[in-house]
Image 1 (cartoon, rainbow, N blue to C red):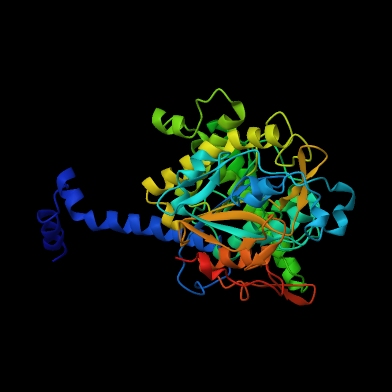
Image 2 (cartoon, rainbow, N blue to C red; image 1 turned 45 degrees about the horizontal axis):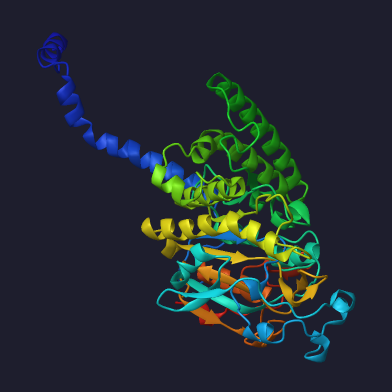
Length: 483
């Protein structure tokens, strides 16, 4: 019986599979391999996701590009024309309206704009000759002429614009965004800052995670091929780095378990582990992101990369990289200004030359960014915000400068659920104070979060005995700009 069974087994032994038969029989297995890879990626993304299990309401935007105009652009010389300044040029403003007491020693005569305004697009919105390229895309913009700040000095006003507080150490708007939404790319930070050369007054605290976990702080890169120190690794070093990461992970998690057993919160250590692992993955992703060799000559020319004006080349590269970042799922991108040889947008003197130098650097690249996002189908999901920390006075400081003015200034928003070709709010006849639909920075933050699907009153973090939020106890969504 045993012999017959063995003979039977030998007789019916399966023949070797051909390559074609093998592929045909295991075809479903390839789907399993692919599914396992996708599920692993989803798990990794979930680990870096925000705190919300779902959005508070349907989102219009999935990412933000914040164009920060460091120093304070003059509203009466950019997007808020005031014919009355021409009429009353040279007059003492204190005889015409109340001047803020903090500017008592800086009040000269009324100073009309050195630039003319032209009407652009189907909306016919007037834009200064400082910004002819931005004027050409004005139908995409919602211009808010009635923004205010609580602070007249750069450092506090910068903190206020970026974090919703005039004091140092609060989480920035980019940190709050990634805290709520997480990242769409597990190989790149969700919050990136492209430093064109000028870190604003207040320094890196403008981009801080504050009391939020360190995972949500802004990662700063430069607009060049290197971009980030030590980001490029040699392939031979990869196994050694992985071994070190694995050792650090095991040591840190052992320490975390001991902390948890003792009743201590290990959140900071978990964030450190996540940052180490992200830094390793960035060594592959960041060099590819920053390498713009695959961009067409037409695209580079549109962004101003072939300009003979170096600040335009720098800011054009920033804008191009911002588009590449949102394409790859970066959630919040901020651009800082390049050095122009003079001051940033802070012309206490020499207004004409100073504003022209700064405008020449950013005007063409910003318009190219808007068009490029639209052409690629990205503008509807990308919220673009342009703003400084405050505006300027309609009267002169010295002979040809303007002092700080937080009592009324202009900014604009585009894409990401924003209604294009509209003007919201108004300042007085001289552009000094808001007289219609007064908004504050908290309202801007509430609106940005709203367009991302977040309720600014419900995205909170428990710290120092209270539930903290970006807008503190303030803020209302600016409904007038919603599409």
